[in-house]
Amino acid sequence: MQPKIDERKQQRKRKYHLTLLILMILLLAALFVVQCQLSSMKADLQAERDAALDSIAAYEKHRADSLKNYNDSLAVALAADSLARYNDSIAAYNDSVANANKKTVSPEELAREKARRDSIEARNREIRDSIAREKKALEDSLKAHAKAVADSIEAYNNRDSIPPQATILPPEGRYYEPIQLKVKCDEYKCKTFYSIGDTSNIQELTAAVSYNKTGDVYYFAEDSAGNRTAWQKVHYDMASDNVCGTNAYPVPVNGKTICVDAYEYPNKPGEIVKDMVSHDQAVQLCEQAGKRLCYFDEWSAACKGKDGTKYSYGNSYRQSKCNTSSKAAKRAGRKEACRSWYGMYDMNGNLWEWTATPASAPNRFLVAGGAWDTHNESQCTSTKYSFYPQNQYNFVGFRCCKNAD
Image (tube, rainbow, N blue to C red):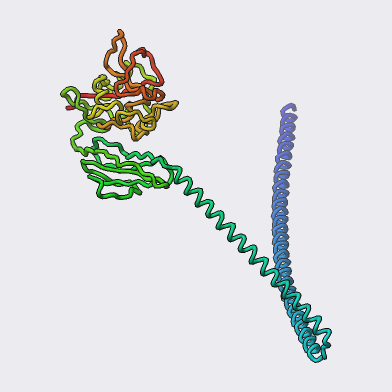
């Protein structure tokens, strides 16, 4: 009996579960139908919205076209009306003139008309005379101003009797490649001139001129007041026997040829020069480049050039030539005029330079050439040994040398 009861319970459970399953399927189907209806309604609403927007756009276009047509018609009508009124006014004026001509004018009216015309003519004459007077006064004022300006210029020119200063670049010396000659003047509106070989072939130097010849070049400058410098002469030695490689040039020292770097380390034009380096670090960096630190006699010979001058550019101190009166070091070679005969830049000023030459004090080495603020104490023979070789200074750098092969 008990098994039959359990079987009936199982049958009821299966029916219950089947009923739930059917209800869930029906519910999902109903949800699907509702979702489809909602999507359809949404699409219909979007279509109606798009149609409404299109209708509004069409209305706005029609409204704008109608407004334009109206404005055009109105303009035409106004123009026609104005023309008609103008023609009517002309016709009325002509009629009045004709009627006036038909009438008999009394002597009093003729006198009044003559007096009126005479008054108008007198007024016009007065206006013309006033304009003529004002024109003449303006012309006189302009002439007086022009004369004052000319007198001022002449007075300035007469007062300015000092000739300008001229500098030729690149400076004289030995070069291994063609150079571009140019002359700089320290005054505004200054003309510069040059002549090759002698002073008989004067040419104005308006742009850089290519030059590749051993010999003399003469130059002078003339300012706007007519003051001119005397002829100045420089000598160029165009060579082709550079045995030292890139950015290094041969220098004769005590019967030997030494290759001296053209620039302070890292020996590249336009580069930031190396400071904050101890003496040992300078030695190591030169060795890494396949070179060595320069001895002072090598360094000094490269600075003094073939004529043994006090500065790399001559015997007289010139503040503008090298970086000797500023607040910091400049990039290598930026002072183009600060070049020695043999081709070394920045040997006066910019940075003191370590050398391999021991100083008289124990464990010290000579530094050479001065720094950016040493002014005329930056000669080719200027030395110091008060720097501790193990220390690093922001005003001390170095350059490298090697024996020529």
